[in-house]
Length: 426
Image (cartoon, rainbow, N blue to C red; front, side, top):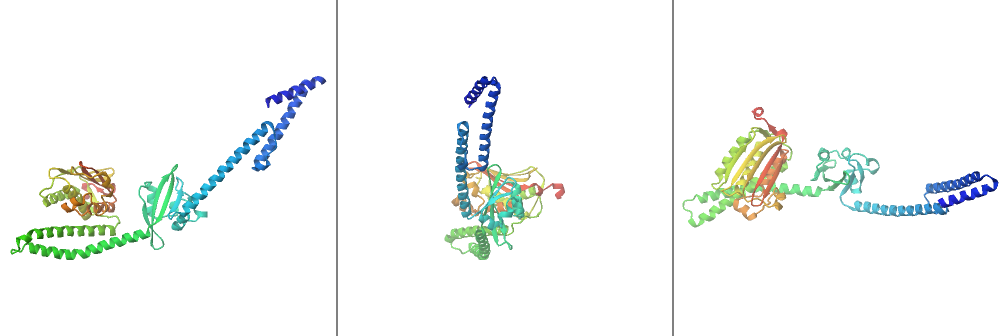
């Protein structure tokens, strides 16, 4: 390009020298070159506005190279555009086939997109609801709190429908740059089965309690019979022990059924935790001559606003478990303290401990780390399930830390609003 400009300028000067005006003719030649380049630029501009490859200007030299490069870039862009569209169509078809609802949300929880199942489950409309905040459309208080808390480790289950006949499980997953993925699943059938199971357990436990009480009474009467054959003493003693164990399991099942039936928060009364723990310590030691050393560490005189019967049952279960799985030469330490986060009760032992793979399932009903040992110690597998539900009723949580062979620590965390100063409680 530069060589051509220089050549045209030189030719103009040579021609101008014939007429005595070399500078003027060189300027005219350069102006002609500039006009031609401006014409080529305008043709390129018109072509770029049309966005049609078949209307590319016929240009040579540098402008031909520019047109060729632009055409290649345009074809590459079209290829990637078609490929992206195919991927988007595949994504939409695949998400439409998912049996769960899928809602894409931006960091402000505004709806970007949702599939047909989400529209059906949440009654969303694509033309009007895209761009709105999801909590303006799903207004259940539980979901609003779940979204606002920003902690999405576990899904929540909401009742839906005009009469609450449908149950929806909702789980939010973070992805990308602060964006959110809301997964919605209809779990009505599972919830109905769970309700049937709870009702069956409660009814069966209630029906079994009366005949078992009669059996236990007759066994006790037979054991105290003076003319009883000595050979029957051992079997009768074992029958009585198993009857007591079965009674304990039924009582735990009934207690758990009551907790599940009434899942709302409790108001309660002011409980003197230090006095309650001392009473439970005496009861635990009285039940077994082989109990380990039980130490109380009361670091706060504050009371706890709670249901006395429920927290007594929860604390008793934790102490009984620690005493059962700690050798008589071991130590169980029970500590009560308060801080800005609330009230805390920790039961720590140096017993056999629990392997890490069992910790997530410890609060499941009837789950046992060692079924044989649990039967030998009279465990039902319901104690920690009761503790978990008691803590949920009080707005708290149960924390479990354990290492096999080094003991366990079970900590009940109560929210700060349930802590009462001793003077105020009195």
